[in-house]
Image 1 (cartoon, rainbow, N blue to C red):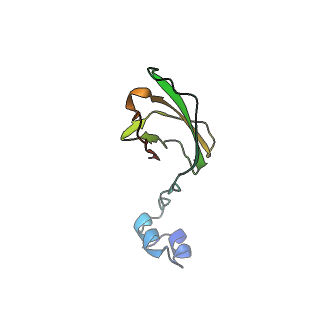
Image 2 (cartoon, rainbow, N blue to C red):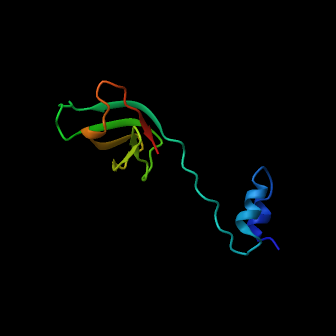
Image 3 (cartoon, helix red, strand yellow):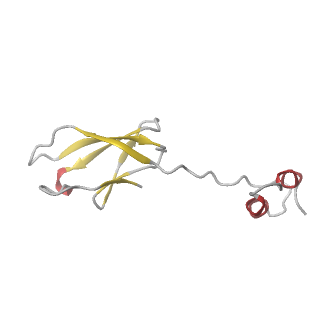
Amino acid sequence: MLCPICIRLLTGVATAVLLAVCGGNSTPTPPPVLNPTPSIAALSLNSIEQGGSSFTLSVVGSNFVAGTSIRWNASDLQTTFQQKASQLFVAVPVSITLWGLPDAVSLT
C-alpha cells in the first residue's frame, strides 16, 4: 500500500524513484540529494620557489560543496572549504609537481 504522500506525488517522471524510496511505507524516506557537478573557472597560486616545501593554490569555480577536494596530478589533497560554493584552497607539496612539465588539476 502506498502512503498518502506517494499517492499525491505519483504523477510525472519521478514515479519509479518515489516507489523505490517509499517502498509503500507510511513514512517515506526523502530521495537522496544529488550534488551538482563542480567546475573550475580559474586557478591562482602564490609564487613557487624551487626547493620550497609547498605553495597555496586557490581554485575558483562553481558548485563546490563540503567534501569537494582538489586533485593535483594523481594526488588527492586535503582541501579547505570556505563555506563558499565558489572557492577552495589547498597547500600543494612541491614534491608532487612536475618541474618542466604541465601539471593536471581536477576536482573530486
